[in-house]
Image 1 (spheres, helix red, strand yellow):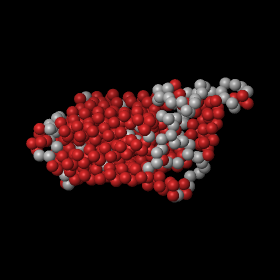
Image 2: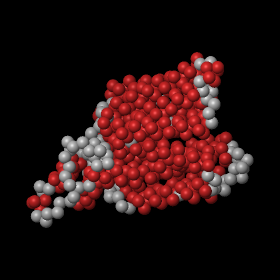
Image 3: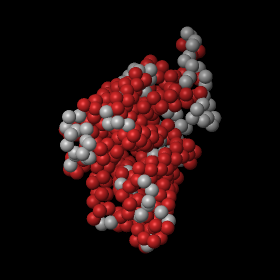
Image 4: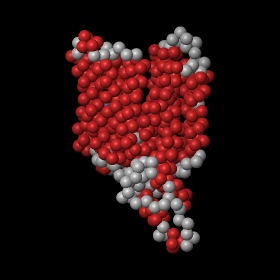
Length: 466
């Protein structure tokens, strides 16, 4: 089978079959991480009650540590897996992702006191932090340029589905039953990954050209050259495509040693500056923190619906936004979706702030549906770009030579800002008020819209070999 780059193929085309299957397979782990995140909210209510499975109810301080230790674990996972990625390879690192998550569910089941939960949440974070480094690089390296955006932006879709599944299961299943079911997922993931090949880029970096060629044909669904005549096989279309790819990879300097000069130069510093702005705007615009305090925002705005129902509805709106990003990202490009998302999110947060400042209690009581509609719109448009595209934009901006370490540093910074945002937002909402918090978030969206609008290049179609 040969491939004409000018052809417009869908993500389900034969050319992309194994890229699509591999992406679905590795996202079993992303789904499992999402379930671990979603488990927290309903379970904390049970653990803090008199019916706590641990015996004594959790104190507020203990509950906050159970919540926030996943962030510290994520930071640790970002750094550890970032260091291992180029040493052990993408596939070996994927096996290691499953182990901390498996131990997490065992600790949840066997917990005798709160220290089991502390250790478990830290390990769950470590697994999730590793997922955010290893899986986006693996997917970006196996995917064709024309579907890379769609396949890469699926990560947040699986996290969101996992969070909804975790929230729902933890709300309705007995405490001890859920870990027994979900612990099977990391095992399924480890068994499924056995059938996948290491990425061609990593194998070329290690000088294993024959294995790299087989991996390239596997992920591109190409028929390897069959002619025993070496000269004739040189003219085979699949062979020509691999040789072109090999030259592109090796010309990117991936086989050379990395030095500090690869980081301290004007083009690379500009890239890290853009990534830093992208991260702070992603977190301080409230894209993650706001959805952790959805119930409180609804209570402030007089929404009369059941908090759990409202949270699930907002989660569904988030899924619609992420699915739209998957469909549109390779058609419209990264810049258009990101800037539309940032601008729309800022306007939605401004609407929440104005509603809190100027709407009377009578108006809010008569229009109890309005806060839910606005939050759903914010969730949907935030997911369209700010949430869905951060990983693919970071990976596409970074040069191939420092991509693994650069992604690790970026994700560590990202995890740090998640921790900061989750600490800042409740304090601001309770001390400064909801309106001030929303004005600040909208201001960060405006800042990001201007800076990224001026300086962020379009990375759609960029070769991953440079």
